[in-house]
Image (tube, rainbow, N blue to C red; front, side, top):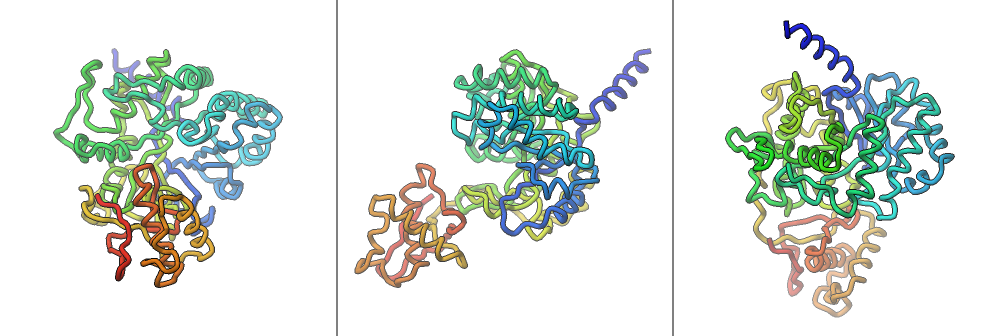
Length: 461
């Protein structure tokens, strides 16, 4: 007797949740000067068997390329115009009329994010305006008969002040009541999603001694963690991180807002001083997370067993113009020439045994030794000269040895002077957040560039 109602319940659930099914998509970033065209990119997205795609703006060429496809699309209001939209319904209307209305009939725009990780990377004056901007965008969509488009914003894990154990998940005190509570109210009222960027890689790399790598990669068969308060048992780091947000929302009175994984992934390469960033780990993590997220029936998390978790893998390409550490430029499923970094099927239907063997990882342990930061070969000399000037302008006698007559002046070469300056600058300021990047003009090396009496400063790990 009980089976029949239960069957219809699941049938109803599968139909009613069609718009937020367990199908996995991909994030299509554009911070590269060597990426395929939007038309080629859409074909590549389809070849990965993705069902959704998120872009970080409302690029018209991409939206046109997506016309007539069955890909659900998520677009974004850039962070820098949130303040203006928050105070002007006219501007919100104009943005929707320009970037949504012309495309909606043929491109499946289903989600619209107002900003990307605003709390993590934008000035504080924008933070209080996220929700007011969301309200104005939502009002404009409704006025144009586009009320089915879900409006939200994306958040990283750093909006929490506590995430361990998961049951202690708590939003930061500086944003909990002023920013997050109004956001959750909006999401609850509009039946939208909390878009979460969750990266077990970053959590693991911060504490590799105490967090097991296999636990972060969904590979552990024996390691389990039981939350002492909730008594929920965890078998992977991803679930712990997601549930910490679930408990944080519950703590503010919103236990049922659905979570959408706006970004997750693992870097396939990085700098010398970045552990665990390799093709083996990236393929392992992304294949395993896809299996979890596409499982039928849905697995959910310990705090939400059986819940569907819509998701987007980061990212489509390795993007060579992303700033920051080397990992930032190596999250792609594809190289810029369109070839696979490793085999993956975002539908989750291809067994791992069907893919080519993966190269064994060689950097899962911290690098020990010296590292130098030198100018990259073949870069623009005008840009290199400007970077040299910047490094030398920071004080601390960074560039004294390359002044005329000093021991590192010769060879009198822009490349060598910049290399010395980069190494000197990085060795002094790395502990305060400096990277060996210089807008793509620098690269790390384990080979000592010193020559003669000139000894290059280094970083010792």
